[in-house]
Image 1 (cartoon, one colour):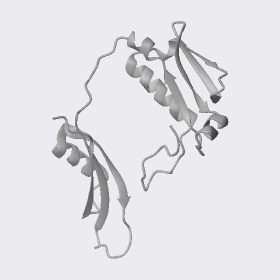
Image 2: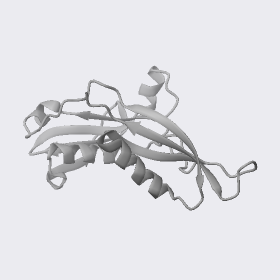
Image 3: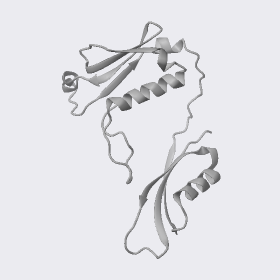
Image 4: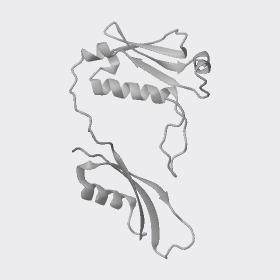
Length: 169
């Protein structure tokens, strides 16, 4: 992973990716796989490919290496920003008890919606109605703009929403 960590939004500061974000993703993967994080040995590891490298061991076996890709390696590939990398030992992961859920054949859909509503209506109310109307296919909703300026009728607020819809069949 590299570059920006957030989706473009008016109310979220543009933050770069970092090693701690990678580590949080790794921990989430372990949780999903049913691997007890407390049973993982974590140590600093030396590796020419990384400027900082951590090795994770589970039940005495190498589970993962994660870190910041070295400047020499990035120079070879003409990359100008920090890259955070994790390599998981899938052979070891296969031995854990996994439940497979097939990935949808259909891509997620993003639709933007611009509304001019009464100021008394809250974002929470809009969100609740969207989940009620769209149902279980609505994966997420986000407010990406609230215009405040001239040419808006008194008592009204313009909202711009993004709806992320997941198709199953």
